[in-house]
Image (cartoon, rainbow, N blue to C red; front, side):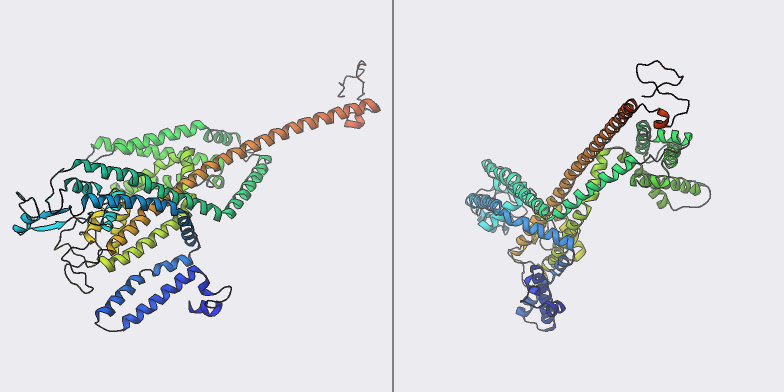
Length: 594
């Protein structure tokens, strides 16, 4: 950063460092890191200094954002996402309106009524006084409607449709202020929760996601004008290449009769159908395998495996003979066939060596048996629709890869924040509903996996519920046991992550794949148009050739009749040839050509 500032200037000038938004972000992160380093060098036990240091440690987790400025593809994706978020003010306003309306209504219906008595024997307890008189705890549900903030958090959990049933049942069981809940006390409140799920969970949020995805595509198309120009040039190049190829003699024109026969066999559709039938039968035999098979069945399946391997070897050999090796490996699917054949042969050889000569590690044999499943992929090359789908996935990999890198940065940053914020949470005093041995923030690796669970929507509301502070927990910066954090931080952390991971990025990845699939279909249509255009050009060329030859013949005949020249001079015929005009009897044995 210092070198760039010295070279281009800091704030003034056409290329000044801080005139770019990306450089502002980059420089801010560098300055934060320097301040964090200086603060850590100040050895002080002051709680204020410790709190400031913790804030800078939280900001330090944003350092991976500097990668965006150094990866052009990732930078383009981020710019596109940010550009797509600008025009969605109306839909955001609609979402907020629905949330606020249902939040205010929820506060009016359920405020203070989600409390319950926590104890062993709840018989005869109907209110708060009965609970306290037995030395039980009068506790509140983590997701409640006591105020608008709590209501909005509970409604967001409802809109994600993860754990919404528990919140709904708590609402149905609520009796009133300082009253013990009763099962299904007020069933008509079901309308409130179902209406919110239908209107917001199914409609409004999906509309929000749809608008984001649509704006993403629109911004992407504006940034891909050069890509469209390259595609048009590529199409013109393909058309010219095919024209030249049509004028060239076919590669098999000099084949011997036996090789031409093999070529006709392997290029026949019936040959592909026969191979597809063999592959299907091979899949059936692989599906028959089971634990503790009879010896006779094991032997039969072994013979079938040898037979199928021999058929695949014969298929590859015939195609190499018919097409030639270099033309054969031009198709990537044929390379897959060769790999499958090699794996099959190696598997058979290892099995024979294991049983006769050399002891082979059973794990290697299991891996080779598992690799037989790759034979199913041979069916894919025979289905044009599936091949088009796979080609779509391959074409989308660069853009999806950039989105995947953005996903990784999101997980990395939030995992580092999670370790700093929730690393001291413990479930020993208060039982956890989401956090535990396999989901916690005590180290970076488990925090990363926990966030992956949150991104998939698997009990993420239980994980967030465990991070919400209790009344008796310690939220100080130097706590040791029963630690917690501010009531505001945990909802902000999880709501932002769920919005970005579940609602935006995952749907953008799906939208990118769908867009490429649509482009793949257009590409197939363009290919068909190219073929039709070349066929029309070929037919027009043939018709023009026929007309030209006919015109030349007519012109020659007229010239002969007008000048009465012997055809021996015109067409270099034998000297004893005589010309007879039409209508005269022939005096020679040679027929007249005019």
